[in-house]
Length: 69
Image (tube, rainbow, N blue to C red; front, side, top):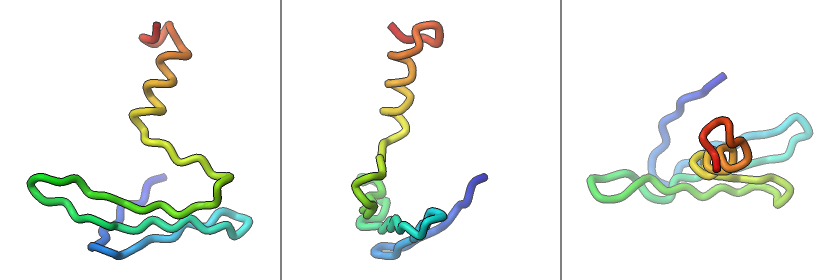
């Protein structure tokens, strides 16, 4: 399931897990011709937040049959 949202500078979204734990994501820099969008992610330290390219790199390192070493 995917949800696509538009947010402007300094606007946020909040994600709650079933226990009520809150994760807040705020846009701190908008996209222009030279700079990427930047976010602040506020979550309890028990949560792991990783970029997808890191997840993919780790997957391929651990799974040699899928292109890893």
